[in-house]
Length: 200
Image (cartoon, rainbow, N blue to C red; front, side, top):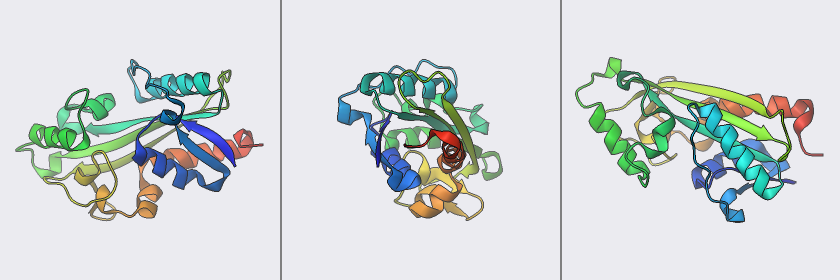
C-alpha cells in the first residue's frame, strides 16, 4: 500500500476517495500533516485543483490528489460554482449553504431547477511532477425543494439524481460512486494511472 496525500481535510471526501481507490493506496488527509489549505484563487475548478495538489505535494513530498468540485445551478447563472463550499460565507457549513441555495431558488419551478455537480481531479506523482494527470466528471440533476436523505455531504440532500429518482443523500455509497461526478473523474484517473502512474 502506498501513501497518498489528499489535498483536503473534508472527511466525506476522504471516505469517498478511499473507497474509490481501494487497497492500493492509503488516503491521508492533509490535516494529518498539519497543512493549512492553500488559497483557492483559481477561476475554474481545474485551476483550484492544481493549486491544491501542488501545495500538498510540496509540503509532504508524497504523491498528491486534489479535487475541486461544486454545484452549478442553471437558474442562478452557474452559481454557486467554484464558491460552492463558501456559498453562505467563509465559515459556512453544509446546512447554511443548503439553506442559502433553497432561498435563492424560492419560487423557481421544478423544470427550471436543473443543475450539475462538476469535479476536476489532479494527480501529482510528487512535488516535481510537471505533467499531472487530470480527469473531470459531470453529474446532471435537479435541485429539490427540500432536503432528502441522511447520507453524503455538501448539497447531496438537495441534489436529485434523475436516473434513480433519489437525492444524492439517499443513495448508498456504492450507488453514488457509480454515477457521481467524483466517481466519473476517478474512473478516468484510474485508467490513466493504469497506464503508468500507479504505485511501484
